[in-house]
Length: 261
Length: 73
Image (cartoon, rainbow over all chains, first blue to last red; front, side, top):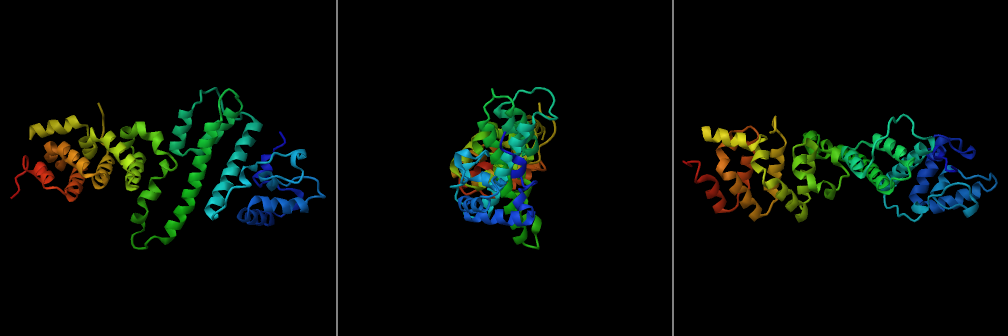
């Protein structure tokens, strides 16, 4: 496999970039400008060296087809509007690299054969369990019979959202009122478990999830978005159990005690 | 049969009452009205009922909720 993802992760840099700080700075600068420009420049720099440096893998290099390395051209034309998107993209790329790296190493430390399907991944996505998802993805990559596309997309979305959420949470924390800092971002920070879960994925399980702390907060956030479709879906799912949800007790107990009064 | 209580559902109920449409709120009031005394005596339910009373906006909702069960002095 010509694609050495360890290099992509920045742990081992090419010989011409032995100073990691310099390399990181240049990489970050390049992300702001767009990959293609950076790649052209570096290609010239390394024309004599005769090898690709890791960052070139994000775009085309001057050797085109003859280059032995894998180039991910998806990001060449991606618009980089602000820093958050850049960082999220970086996280996404690193994650992809980590997945490929695991896949090439093989099924390490994952015993037994477990049936994988999209439900597993959705469940893990809901729990935000990125590490486990990566491990499973690595295992999954070894069995060609399973379609990886949805899995990869789900994992990347979770990573992206977690990354975005982390950066925005830091900003909010800095700007929150010093008098009441806990209340300022209680829902945003404590309800993190469902970050990145789309409403369609949980539409079928609204009522069971209402009993979960994080699920409940997730739906509260969805209500605050004031989207009529979401509101109606939540209402219809919850309406039959409204008294039960209000009291936190099964409804027949409530009715029984009512009769005794 | 379910065991244990759920301390979180009432927050969702409060939000739902706050953000729902008038006809939906009417449905909720109809649903809750028969059990309002019991719910009000419940630790979690009483908060949800208080929130609901805050957001009542139609006279018929008020009468539905209070006329049968509670004597308003």
